[in-house]
Image 1 (cartoon, rainbow, N blue to C red):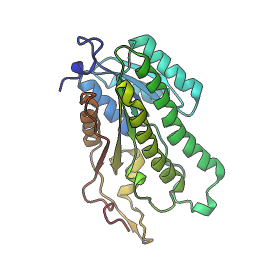
Image 2: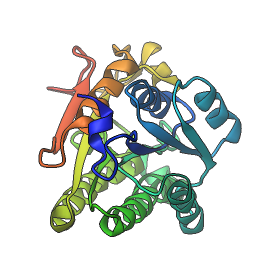
Image 3: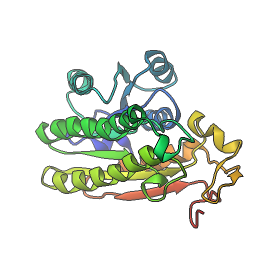
Length: 259
């Protein structure tokens, strides 16, 4: 499906996407897939240099906006910049997130670490979704799509991951509420739950990570491009169709029957 067909407002203009956490990993891969498919992509993230690297690698039109998604004013500035540049928004890939400190037992987790993970993963996702929702509801013609980056941790936790797991379960509630509240305005919302995509964040999987039985085990990973292809498929559906939840994971990772 050609991305040009995604924009009802102007069939001769490419669709407009915002990708958060676009400076590396899954965000960068999804930005590349969208750009390759003809989308104009606004790149958001905390590191200006990383955003510029992503932008330089994309073949199409881009806009890089340094953004801390946990800051309401910075989120408002991001979506204002997108509106000023493009006048429309067709897609938000709500991807920015952090795992927090690894290997810290629940009873030893500092409040500051808990707070940082919640502010980035859950509050940040809400703020971006709310800003996108406002734009999509107000624009003419109405509508758009929000895709939230969940995780298989939205279903099954890893050991010593209470903050991350809690936020990812919260993302599922956010996805369901957005889907329901967006119905009158042609705003579709889906969630992609990802397991062991090969990025800097998951490099530790290849060295061994704790399992539920207390052992360390090396876990298989998959090409991040396969995640990006899945997001692109979700994004290119007409607004009359929605993939509510999709799980994409390394086939033999310990998830089904984990522990």
